[in-house]
Image 1: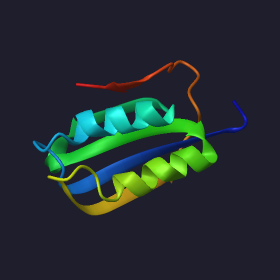
Image 2 (image 1 turned 135 degrees about the horizontal axis):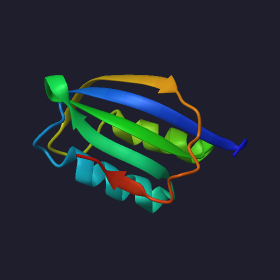
Image 3 (image 1 turned 90 degrees about the vertical axis):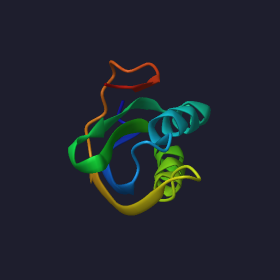
Length: 93
């Protein structure tokens, strides 16, 4: 998995209750990424995404805006180690 880019992000703003997780899952799946998305405390969303570097970058660009009803105020991104256990992009509780 040396050619795989992985990132972990926390997204703040109006990102819960606006379909962010479902839209992120669909967008990531359409791009062929694997990983997960979940709501976390403080009204934030957390994402772990991995795949081809340029495709992960496309997804990160989308995360800065999110779905139409969302308002992203801040996206904190950190590199992560790829995780070969994922074969799809899922919504976590």
